[in-house]
Image 1 (tube, rainbow, N blue to C red):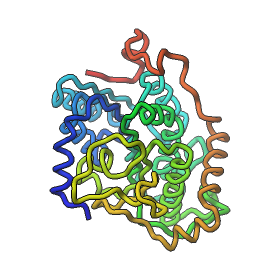
Image 2 (cartoon, rainbow, N blue to C red):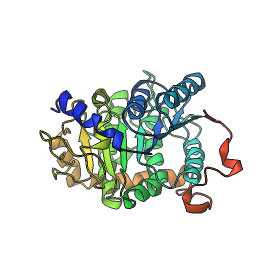
Image 3 (cartoon, one colour):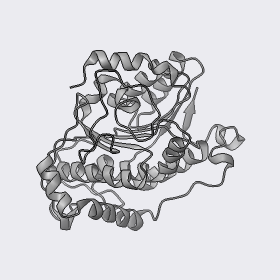
Image 4 (tube, helix red, strand yellow):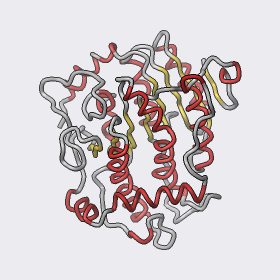
Length: 324
C-alpha cells in the first residue's frame, strides 16, 4: 500500500512540472473532475481539455480551474463518447491543437441494469463508453503521447475502470453480440483493457499505460506523475517507494494494473490463462477490426505546423469548445 504521506510528499514537488497538457475524457464530474482539480492545484501552468456531456458543469469547471492556477488554460467540449465517430472528431481537433499530450485520463462511464443496448454503430453502449471509445482515444492520440515522451516529458495513459476484477471471457464473442450479460460485459471490458495496456506498451514503450481501479484517484495525481514508468520524465520517487511492477511482473515494464491504494493488482491466474492463449494479440486484432468496420483506420491530423497551431484564427474557438 502506498502511504498517503508519501503521496503528499510527492505531490508537493509537482510545482516543478510546468505546462503539462492533459485530456480528461469524462472530466465534468466524479473522478475526472477531481483529478483535473488536483492537477491544477499541484502543477504550474497546465493546459487541460475537459470532455463530457454536461455543458453547464464543464463550463463551470474550466472557469474554476483557470482561476485556481494563474497562467493556466482549460477548454471544455461537449461530446458523447458512446459513438466512435464523435471520438474521432474530438481527436482531430486535439491533434491539430497539440503537438504533445502528457496525460490522457479516461473515466467516462455508463451505468445501466438494462441488457445489451446497441448504438447506431452496432456496439453495446456500455462496452463502447467503458472500453472501445477509450481505446480509440488512445489509438488516435498515441502520436501526441509519443511526441511527449520523445521530448523527454511525462507521457501517461490511464483508463479508470476495474483492474483486479478479471474473469473468464468468450474468445469467440469478444464484443458480446451473442452472449451479453452485465457480468460478462464487465469481465470482457476488464480483460480486454488489461491486455490492451500490454499491447500498447509493446508498440509505444515511451508511454506508461495503466488500467486502474477507481479508488486510486483519492491519492491525487501521484500515479500519473511518479510511480509507473514509461519515459523517465516525472518527479523523484519518495524514498519509501519503488517503481511499480508491470502486468508481466517486470518493474517499470510499461503496462500497469493498479488497485485503489496504488499497489499492483490483477488476478495472476486468470491473466496467465489468457496470456497462454495469446489474448493480447486476439484483443488487438479484434479492436483493429472493430475500428475498421465502424469508422475506418486511425484518422491522421490535418497538416499543421509542428502538430499544433493553437493561435490560428480558425482554431481559437472551434465549434463546441468553451475556453476562459
